Length: 382
Ligand code: DAH
Image 1: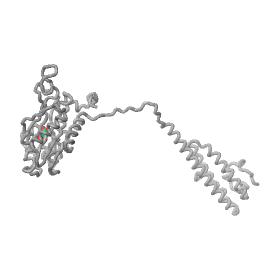
Image 2: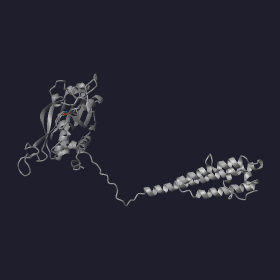
Image 3: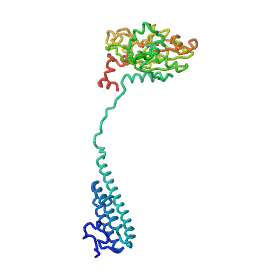
Image 4: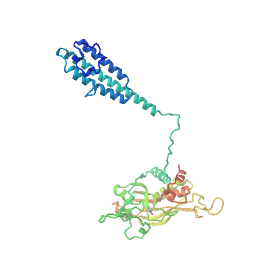
């Protein structure tokens, strides 16, 4: 007996067509139409991933999904004359189920997207996150000022290693072993594995870059070298075991002492202001000849030595001049180390202590503040 619908049969897909009393193509089609409507109805209820998964497994699950049952129980045992139509309608049914699953998946994706939109919506009326913006350290700022001045008159900026060999730090700068100036540069040697070819040390000045630059490049040379240097000094208001220098070097075929003093005077006026004066005094460095020490007229008392309200100026202690840095004409012996022809070239060099310069310019009386990085200090130089 044919059952007009399968609504009154429990789990019709677990039975064969013969058991369901289905014998004609029309009856087969009706069976599938009812199944399809059931699937449609269930698919409409999917609103969460777990319901989707239940639906998917129930209908197209490989092992015991309804689709698998239909194949197993309706198609395989079907009479020869029904098999073709069952196969055909089953194929359509399979595509239909796949479509339902795909649509449900898309629906869920859209829902998830909408939920994320709500969650992540930016409320522009809320106050923002305020991140404090840092600034360059005062030493970095002074480096920059010095670089700008020298770059504007044709110098380039180069940097070098903070770990040096004695050759570059001393010998090639005309400071042989046992030369007394090495005492002033007592410094940190690195502990190296036994048998290391050369000793290494933290550079005591930026001057080694004079040698490294001239080794690499033929004249003309115009460079400045900003960087950190190290000496075994005990920390106090004017000493630190690490500090900063800017080395300068200009070598060409026709550089005179006038070019030298003119360049330094230009730099000092640019840095401190046009009203300062410069002077130089004889000094000694093994790598310059003659060597000088440059002074600037005290920028605080206008070079008078007296304070505004009378009495002596506290900055220059009444001297009217402040010692700035060492410099000189490059010693011909140095050219010998870099294969420059000392008869053809001449030049000048200088080594500026940046911490000291910054302290002078900004009225800072303790070098240690540069290394403590207390924001209350740093904030004063935005
Ligand atoms: N290297 C010297 C020091 O650290 C400073 C110096 C003096 C550099 C004279 C120079 C120079 O280039 O010409 O004490």
